[in-house]
Image 1 (tube, rainbow, N blue to C red):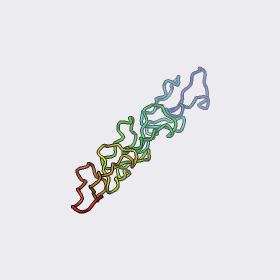
Image 2: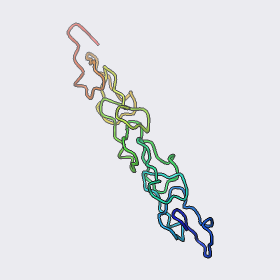
Image 3: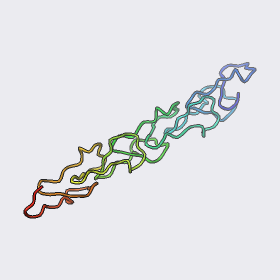
Image 4: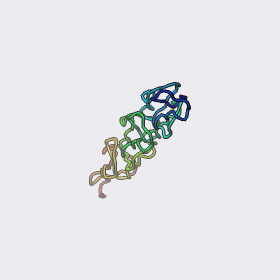
Length: 167
């Protein structure tokens, strides 16, 4: 049998009697007798066809996603990075590679691939932690203080109001 196929019986006379390796696998040799000879695509990849003869047919999961299993037959098995995170690479095998949005920012969506997807906290607010999932995580400056910038990372940026004024 050719690469990408195998056969379990004896006396096979035609290549059409060979069985294609399953989706999510490939097989580079010839004359393979068991489906175990088909190699699973690595974690962080998937493969949607059958009878694949080379590993380059295993497709990397997109940026903003990761996938921990091997032999995956579809991109739907690539999991989205959580809200509050992003991920710029492809073919990632662990969720810990999804980076947290910086302090002073938040991000409500999932599966995002760029740090610019993290929104800045509004002026008059700040946020000290990383990986915030919504704007509620941005804290208002205390009464009697203000700040005009956005994306602030701590309460020290809140300035006292001038004498005779209030906030």
